[in-house]
Length: 261
Image 1 (cartoon, one colour):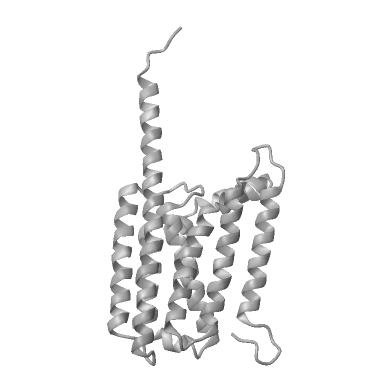
Image 2 (cartoon, rainbow, N blue to C red):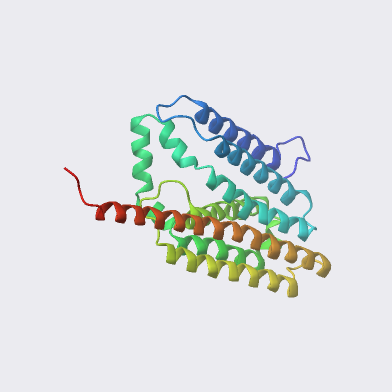
C-alpha cells in the first residue's frame, strides 16, 4: 500500500486513475453536441467527487492506528464521494458522447438483470450496510491493515457499494427499472438507522487494537458524517418526488382540457 522500496503506492495508483477519470469526463463534457452544452455544475461535481475520493484514499492509508482518520476516510469514500459522482450523471454523459453502437450496448447493459439487481435499493443497501457491519464487527478491520490485497478489496467495496446505494436512492442517470419512491424512502430510513446503530456499537465496542479514545472520536465522525450524507440523500429523494408529482399533475391537467378544433 505504501511506497517503501521505490514501487508505486496505492495513493499514486488511485490518484493517476482519478486524474484520468477527470480528463475523460471533461473531454466528453466539452465536446460539441447537437443536444447543447453539458451543464458546468455537473463537471464541477465530478471533479469534486474525484478529489474527495483521492483525499479519502490518502487518509485511509496515512495512519492505520488512527481510527478517527479511518472513519473520516470511510465517510468520504463511502458516502460523500459517491453522492457527488452520482450527481454528475456519468452514464447520461456517456450515452450522449458515445457513438451509436457503443451507446446502444450501454443502454442494453442498463436494462440487464445484474444491473437491475445491483441498482435496486434493497440489494444495494445490503451490500452497503452489510459490508460495513462485516468489516467492523467481523474482524476484517484488523486483518485488512496487515493484508494489502484485503485492504484494497475492502475500500473498493466501500466505494462501489456507496455509489450503488446513492444511485438506487436518488440517481439522476437513466434507470429503466427505478424503484418506487416509497420503497426508496423505507430503505433509506433503514440504512440511516443501521449506520447510526453501527456508530454507537463501535463507540462501546472498539475494533481490536483500537484505543477507546480513538474509537470514540472515530465513531462520532461516522455518526455525524453519516447523518450529514444521509440528509443530502433525503433532500434529493424528496426533490425528485416533488418533481415527479408536479409532472404527473401537469399531464393530468393537460388530459382534462377540452380539445379545440
